[in-house]
Image 1 (spheres, helix red, strand yellow):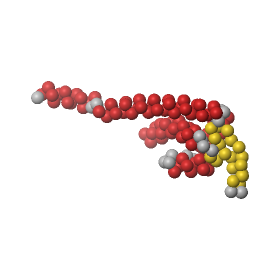
Image 2: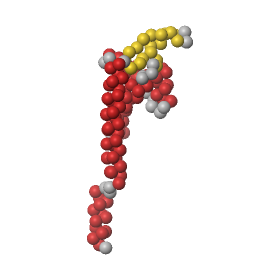
Image 3: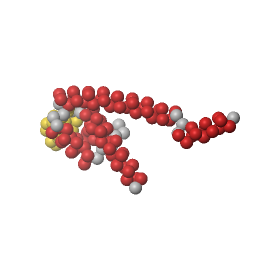
Image 4: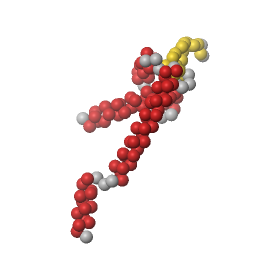
Length: 129
């Protein structure tokens, strides 16, 4: 049960991060396999069953443009941010920075302040002294 809860929350957390990472990488043109490899090389592995539907969805939303081109004797579909995608990426990046800063502060403060049980114990020891 606990593992299932963790896995669901982990997937939820990754979903938005993957979208942001894909948009960031597609500021420059990539085809699917090269994009997947680039993300993995930077520590963010993504399954092709996740990547390709994401690329199709982002293109349908008008955030990506794509075209076919022959490379290494094979036709490959290349993706890049559209004008709308560039604007949205900038907005999402600002939102991400705001959230990250707030989360960093919240986590830092939670680590600095003692847990509720510890404060009661500390107060009891202080009263005894």
